[in-house]
Image 1 (cartoon, rainbow, N blue to C red):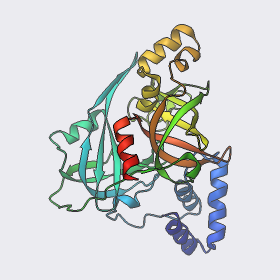
Image 2: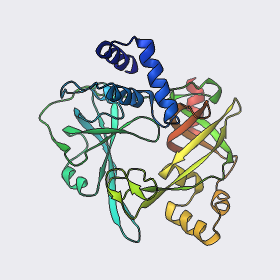
Image 3: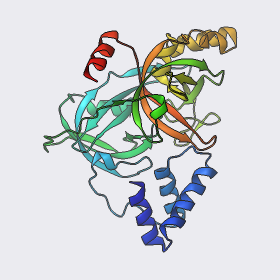
Length: 317
């Protein structure tokens, strides 16, 4: 998809494709590697006075890119996760995730607070028409949001073929930038960095200095992140685990972790609950951290190792 964006920018700007790629790389460096190449391409296009969205067009799910403002898709509801409630001293709310798919791929959609009412009566297997925008999730993939003017409604269209996502098992030594893989590995080191980060209680976006880019200054909600080194005997790599995946390896929820931190005023008691050396199955995406020029693994699922499943995998090999 990046190659397509580069071709469009080059054709509309009069630059050659190498010059466009150079501008995209420069923009990523300027933003300290905190944005994907596709996201940087949209910023470069905007700075050049170009629009990559010439008209509102129906998209296949696989073509959704983080940063898209006008996403129009039809997808089948593959899974509806229960709504999760959160509460702070001055705010409360809830969030629900659903998985949508078509013949090209699948995408997660996050619904916040009153948006959840829009999917009341929706069942797994229903086909829906969605208009919204896309943000980048913690793995660098696209995540759909409705926003203020988005819609989600049942559609009479039929989707008969669904792209099945089979996650390939890999060793750490074989991982490459952009891979989405499952690895069996253990945490051998956890960094004593900031465990908690602030979220907007209305839209779930990361807050900076107590303010949301869309909703301004609010009493923030919070979530949890664990970063460290995982090792499988073939190699090691920095891994980042957000939210429920961090809770999984710590063994307590974020509220219990925050209470423990507040009592001790130190992250060490929380980190000490993580069983170093225990094998987990980590599923996620490999990306290159531009700031440190190294690969890292961003988990999108963490599971305990099932001995029976591992035996079946060995027998099938």
